Length: 312
Image (cartoon, rainbow, N blue to C red; front, side, top):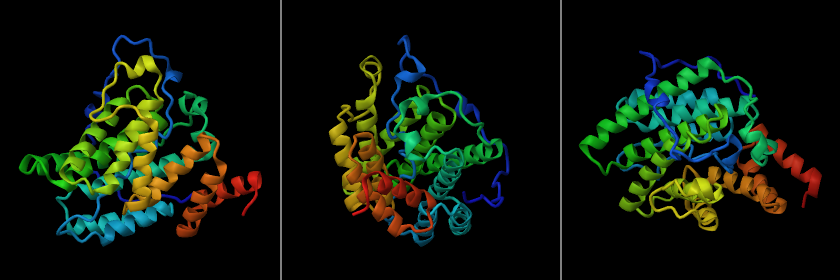
């Protein structure tokens, strides 16, 4: 596993954890059991990156996302640091930074392996490895840096696409950390709902902002996977809980997206494995392993599938 190599903490002050602790279940009065929420593809409204942002040089963000997909976390943080040095008040790079810390922790804990993601019992199992407190602090600080800057930008312009994306990412990575690392699946519905709201606002402004369809598709699939008695109490804007429509949105990103095209393929591969379609998953993993050869997870998951069904 790639080490963080002691990236800078970027912490000029302690992260405000009161926001993190303020989430409450959306299903008041419902007899919710921990295993009731089937966290299919809780990965991730994570990394909701833009189509190219007008007036902004995104080469360093392209580089950061490429390093994230290769699981080269130190290089990803370095690219983000260079971008922040040039654009200190922009919110998006801080959301990318938070994504890097999240991916590092998910990889360290083995949460990204297929055996984990296709097994609901393992997803909701409370007997998890202990999260790294140092990484958690850096993660929360990056989320706070993103949201405070995005709030300022949206106060000045409610249609600021980069700020909307930053909020969508920040709430998305918060969803994943709470659901997958801290095992608070019910509580994680709150930031998931916020992430979808920002994505819907962005798509209303620009329907061709294809990467944002990942959040919409994730929300459709997630809500459609919830038990009925929980779904009854949960409302996401413009989401009907149609799993088929959710997959179609993710396929749109896999075909037309920019930064999120590879990530959409990861989610589609997970969905294919869960739906007992190993050949589809094999094809997607072949593409990912070819495009991101430094990522050991893609190679190992492809090797597992090849051993089971044979390589073409």
